[in-house]
Length: 327
Ligand code: CP3
Image 1 (cartoon, helix red, strand yellow):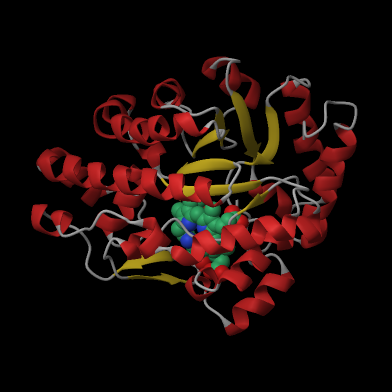
Image 2: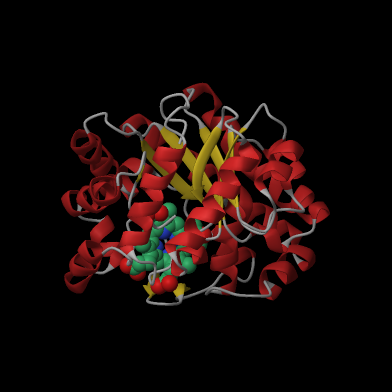
């Protein structure tokens, strides 16, 4: 949840000299940024510092990440020709730097906390590839989905094969959990999710099954999609703040774990607010095994480092009677 992001002065200092993609391509620097939040905040896990768009470059797409906006694609995908020009990712040759950074980060973490690997889910990646930039209405994506289903399915197939290979390579390099980020999937109806997205996210989760590594399935605005997302797969579900966590968990079923739910904007308020919102989440999960305390989406750059560090301490104190790693 951008725990290594711009709200950390130490990260901002590194960013003065390097852009985000250059950090990802420098294994030493990438491993250092990955471990910063563990050192500074005392969080219970590290997530590889990368971006969901990073492997897309290896598939032959040129893009940049613009400050305050997000990924911008030079030549968005619009038809079968541009979709079929994408190459299937070969992680060892296309993104060796991230695999090397995983090894270095693991050494630095020294088995004290687990390391999470991740990738973008096919829908969220396709939405950037087709729209060319972040969007609110997803009109181009939906137009292609409805008007040209053949291209849509070919694109989703290529993305799911590539992302499955990417996650498997990350597991081989040493990550101990994997997270699939389907950040924008909440814009779909359950029926469209079922027809156009579910088979592809499912394919990725299935390919990871034999590794035994826990798989986290994350999205925002997914209150209408939880049952469908559960069918797609995952051992842990990441939810945002638009639905109470106990209601989401009841709907997902207690055979899966749950994380998320604190509105990151809470961190812009007083510490009193942060504590009362967090206490409410803890009250709702009532110590049930399988809860991971987390934000519902990315950390705002304006969040105060002190508030975030104090939140980590608050959750640790409030759950110190639970089983180890329960927080
Ligand atoms: O969470 C972490 O600390 C791990 C690193 C991470 C980043 N991006 C680094 C990053 C992860 C897991 C991501 C995933 C990502 N990237 C997603 C899925 C998760 C989510 O937030 O929904 C998406 C949609 C992207 C695409 C993207 N990259 C956006 C929308 C932005 C924000 C643009 C902005 O400036 O506001 C980025 C840039 C980005 N990726 C930052 C970080 C820390 C911002 C800081 C920077 O530019 O240095």
